[in-house]
Length: 278
Image (cartoon, rainbow, N blue to C red; front, side, top):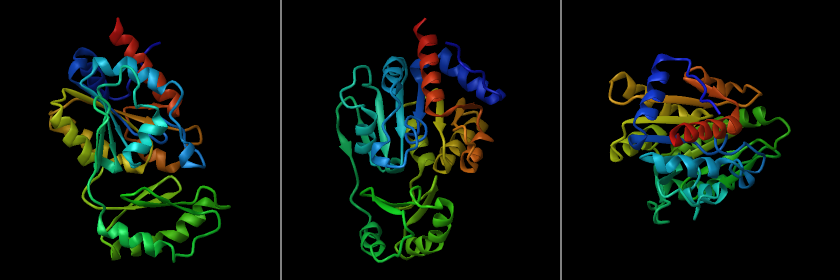
């Protein structure tokens, strides 16, 4: 299986650095839409059936594999099938955009105390009229309102935008838009901050980041900044569904490499593993 060729010079340099010195390379991946397909019920968004095998082949040859997600870390671990998987000792799951950390080598989870704004919001959301089909997901450290099951998901999301942003402002929270979802969470942490911190901790020599939605743009910006400062070569990958959603296009336009959803991501990870096994 061959590795797809990046369409940019910076992406090609990032891929070359990963292949030349894999022991200092970090592969960082979003979960939903990247390792797992987007489905109507988030609790059934299991990782692609080939994801664990691909990561288990790749991870031992790298400095680390990061799964960087807005989900609680334990949820991503469960849906990913990561706990106890052979070959994944170098896997780290950063949940809630980096507020939580789960290490596969120890099985330990580190998490902060709940933000008081989230506690207050939990009670307030019960009083908010929701369009039919919309649902609230309590993630513990954040709350998300999904409209994917509504008759008109986009219209339902638009109707909720202003009231949810008002609630976020009242409680000192940030709003994170996604595919038919608005998430209200503590400010000050995003995927860019989390990724940059992890790369420094790991003394990374290169990074591959793959994502699919607006919440991943902060990680894209972090990699672009590191590349611009000549601090770290990097490869930006977009996991794009065949439907060509506008939110995904925001990433695809900036990506060095676009692959067809989780199938394409797993194929890329497998191709990288095969190359490094030679």
